[in-house]
Length: 342
Image (cartoon, rainbow, N blue to C red; front, side, top):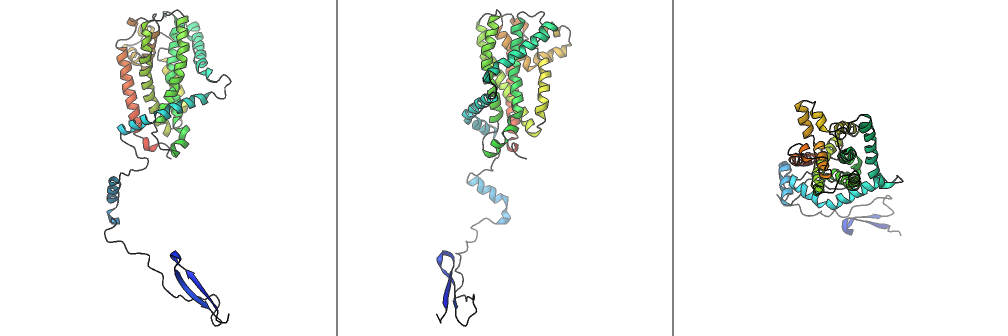
């Protein structure tokens, strides 16, 4: 007790760092260092690390050597398409879940997928067929109108869903790494699934109104395929624009309504062609919505003879699908790094 108490402090790895003795003659709390800190280890050899002055050149070289890439960087267009194909199961499941969730609060549920275009067709028949008399010169106006309403509704709903595909999924975009084009493509697939159900009802309407079942019904599938490719490209275009300008979602319904009035949904373009300038008739015949609607009418209705259709209609449909489908995909891909930021 008289000799005092010895205190030892340990350093790294349990080695003694400082030793002190508190005795009767030393002030309380005073420790005297007995040995220095041990060395941390040998210094790295010269040239072991690239000099800082080399900057990004050396860093880029190291990244390339070890296969490192910038997080969220845009891949090449071919790699992007390959990644998108690899997410095809996710896209299909995501589209189905969105379609099911759309009507979860409605008592009739997904029955509204079919009821909505039917109600629209009934309203348009009353206004344009009965009150305005646009049915004149059209055999089987009910089937003619329903085909136009159902087919245009496919494009309209897909485009409107595309404007929400990025803003409504920002949490998913910021949390997971996946091709962002999966979202507008899923919006298109969701509307395609809805169209399949609507086509069953539309086929019944066409048959009930007196149209026979012919070999031309086989053209339904390629017609829908071309329109789906066109829709997907158009949806990706509006999805990129709406990602930057969210007000676009409020404007699109008005644009789509004007487009519908210019697409021969309610009337025969032959009536317009008799009085309109040649330029207007040409623009109407190249209107993609009119092209796809006319293809479906020709497939389902014998009362729409082939000679009443504009020439090379399938070529026009394929051209629209290729140009808008591929162009929309490239346009969306070019801004891949920007989605979800800001």
